[in-house]
Amino acid sequence: MRGLSECERNLNRARLEAGAANIRTLRGAATYVQRAIKLRMGKRGPSHPFWGRTSPGEGLLGQRTGKTSDRVTVGMLVSSGNRAFIPVGSPDKYVKNAEEGGAFTTSGFFRIPTAAAQTPSGVDRLMGQSIKGRPGFRLIRTKAGKLWGIHENYTKGGFFKSMTLMYLFVKRITLKGHHVFLGAKKDAEPKIAGKFVLEVQSVVRVGNG
Image (cartoon, rainbow, N blue to C red; front, top):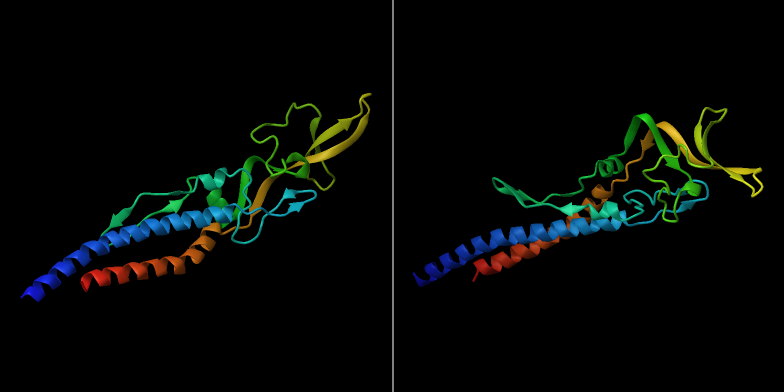
């Protein structure tokens, strides 16, 4: 009888420990995935002499300011029946677009900065600002039909010296999916599975007394 009572106590402890272990592992897994996503977003792509910063490659995102990865957060624990999960993601729509890719159109124009219009990290120097009315800027359309925003350069005497292609204006863009979240998920799965195995072993030890 003493053995049965002890076994019952151990099983009850194991049952309580199993629930706590699952939650503990889920939280650790969510934090690990968040960190993995941020690392993949922190890669820097090569620099093109005309187009500036380009993509670092499949499964990576060449972020420029760090604000994108800062917005990747771990959500609250959600339970439904015998299932539980913790979401990891970003509230920004453009992150989903960068993840999945696709074709996008606009009623106005998309403005694509060249290297001349970017900071060293690849950010548009005039982000959030219009070039309309800015000194030296104007629009031209090439014989091929492309619309460019240019900056005209003059000498101190007021004579035309040269022009620099600053922005390409387009109605439609096609983005290649970066699959940052998918890549982080694939990397994390075996490591998280290993953590669950360790927790299960710990619970079994409690059950065995």
